[in-house]
Image (cartoon, rainbow, N blue to C red; front, side, top):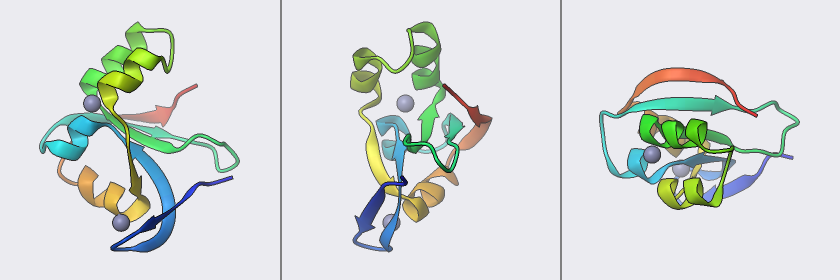
Amino acid sequence: MTEIVNCSEHGPNQACMICCHLAKENGKEFAHVLVEPDDDDMETAMCVDCEAHLLSSDGWTEELNEFAKWKIYCRQCFEQTLKNHYLVAEGYMK
Ligand SMILES: [Zn+2]
Ligand SMILES: [Zn+2]
């Protein structure tokens, strides 16, 4: 099931997750984590610092969550925000 977020700007929309660094800053390198359509996980974008954290720890740990301070964005806000950053990696992550 895809999560729906009700964006004040764009209305009901697919929920996506973004790390606080991409939310706050511009011009960062980031990884785009895709999900299968029938997957429960949210599509996610994380800066390379968060990705390094993820890769060096054992998956999606509490520590990573604290570091990333995930924000829920609607699909359109997500895509707009990512235009301010540089995509360096894209793929499915499990
Ligand atoms: Zn980050
Ligand atoms: Zn929105």
